Image 1 (cartoon, rainbow, N blue to C red):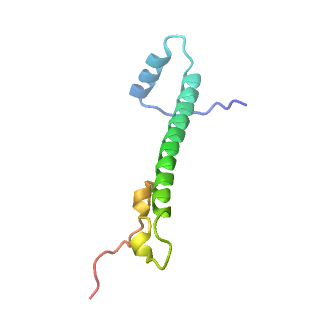
Image 2 (image 1 turned 45 degrees about the vertical axis):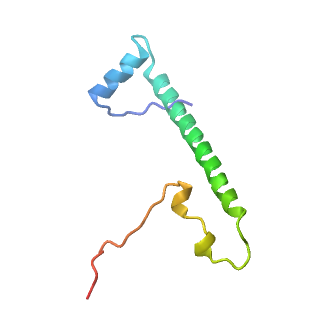
Image 3 (image 1 turned 135 degrees about the vertical axis):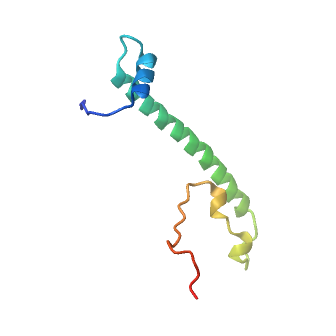
Length: 96
């Protein structure tokens, strides 16, 4: 089912879309193809990051498993490459 939304674009963006689709082109098809392309590129990036993460986990899995301190053998979450949201208190000033 197709839905006809109303969107506002800058004249520059609209001009670029019209140039890309040509004189008899279809803007809707162009935008749908673009959305599919972005989905494809995100999936490729996730696959690369996933393979890297597996390699990191495997590297640590071969380490000692006896009476180890997590700080000695733990995986740094920032090393995994996921987008990390750090929540900080709004007031960072020390109170006396």
